[in-house]
Amino acid sequence: MRRALLAFALALLPVPAHAAPRVEAVEAALATLADHAAQVLMTEEGRGRADYDMVAVRWHSYEDHWHTGQLVWALLEAGAVLDRPDLVATARRGGDWWIATEYPAGHPLAGLVAAAHGDRLGELINFTTIADGTPGLFALTRATGDPRYADAATRSGRWLWANTRVPEGTPGGEGLFYNIIDPATGEVWRDWDVHTQGPIRDADKAARAPAPITRVARPNIEGFLFHDMCRHTGDKVWCDRFIAQADALLARQHESGLWLEFEPNEADGSQIHPRFNIWNAEALLQAYEVSGDRKYLEGAARTARWAQKVMQKDGTLFYRTSIDGASNRAEVTGSAVAFNGILMLRLKDYGFTEFAPTIDVFARWLIANRYAADHPDSNLAGAVIDTRLKLADGKVALINRDVGSTFGIRFLSLYLRDRQCEDVNAWLNGRAP
Image 1 (cartoon, rainbow, N blue to C red):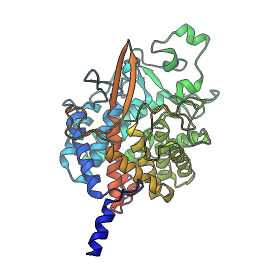
Image 2: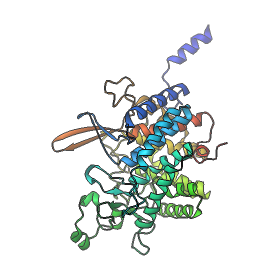
Image 3: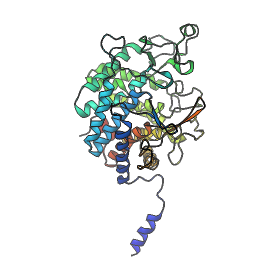
């Protein structure tokens, strides 16, 4: 009786924020998220949905190729850990859409996919609109045995390598790749910053005062495209090129663990993009897989430690955050919570046990911060909270972004594997038994 009373009393105590959630709760949350991704985020044509305007009750297209590629990857991860072949079939629909957008032979951009950035940049193609989506395409080939997906991603990678490298000897351009391609002309823009100067290039103005190199080019290692190409083709030259890319990235890392000289960060640290730096750190983990050199792990750990410093105690991360963690607290970014969780989980399995408590905090956050599965708006039902507030033409747009859910699926899938004592890095890199 005394034991029963003690157990009852303990059950009434609040669960510490750092405690690991029950596996059953993780599985239930993951299953709900996977259903949301398959039934809402993936369209019939296979194009992933991106930004949902809760005021106008409509979806906005935005960088469809990387959002679709990440959706494909998320569905594959959930399908594997939950043993749900239906999710793999849905992921394949996304892959079929992605590869169908490739420019045909004879076109100036033949081999590249028509990855329009969207929003105010219109049809312009951003390097990372492609590369951020390619991990899902390579994963789809590995999951299905169908080479078409990885082959298409590889052709885009070959085009980007051949056409977007900043020439050797360009001051400040060491190891960088130009960002923007104009599909109307086939030109790679080398002197015009679309984010500060607009989407219409003024050739005369660009000639008189070209934009700084770090505003038109970046390491562009996000999505670790050249590593996946090496793994898919077996051609070691792509691994060598990827390591050179990682070395250039590491050389430019700020002591904070961030990359301040590149957009979408602000160089003075007044605005730090919630995912850009994690993309870079994720690529450094893949550089370690290729090389075995722990300098890449240390670089990734620096990025993760910054997130630990600026996160709220409950795990919340905000979109508008400065280098010292100051924020207006207006936009909650579930994708940053999940992506940092992925980074820290992988670092833990590489031996960085310092991140273990934070990983559990992030898992609890993602379980708690979702729209109800029976939410009256089916576009939101089950989704992770990931909000943006935009003002245009006198209208307010309150956005919930898909990436909270897709990154949430990836993290919770790996978190379940970790709870089952699997090495998540071995799983992701094909080293699992």
